[in-house]
Image 1: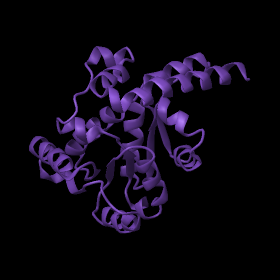
Image 2: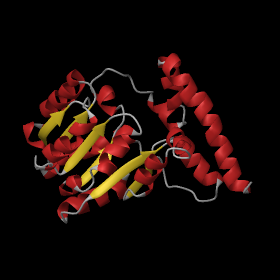
Image 3: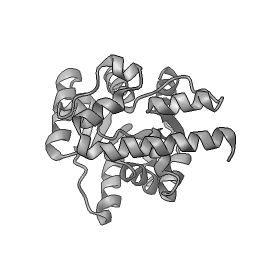
Image 4: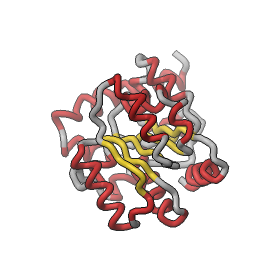
Length: 230
């Protein structure tokens, strides 16, 4: 986390551009067939492990990662740091009432100076370039994109030239829903023990069962094949 934050602050200070992405077991499974998603992830400047399963897999494969860096935790740290360092943020994604609530909460906590703009995540494909230009022209130094995969990764990758004016861009998935209080996050002990996925499964079994139970099984198979090369 500290290493990632340091790279973000340096990029802002030096007026450079960083495209950040997180990976979990489900995304790595999707990347095996979704070549566009694979390219958008592999060509990012920083890739963090959002899922504890990825950290465990890295140890099993004898290429251990230092720690899990959850996207929502990175986002929260950057928002707080933006208040201290006078950085400007654009919030893009989720439903209108959700993103508006996120902006209201952060403005109340940190003041109006950190927010240069926001927009919900519902748009037509032909509107993408216009939205990207709006974000780039806003003066934002940080962009958070709250959408599901692969939509957020592909938006950031497809519009990377226009968004090059923004120093740090990252997809944050359902983080706006958590901040706005629409979705409850797992207790700390479940996060630390790698059971956050199970907490989400209990909350939304109909929507999550296939993603976690089937997806996690495929991920385990991929890891075993990588370790033993078959």
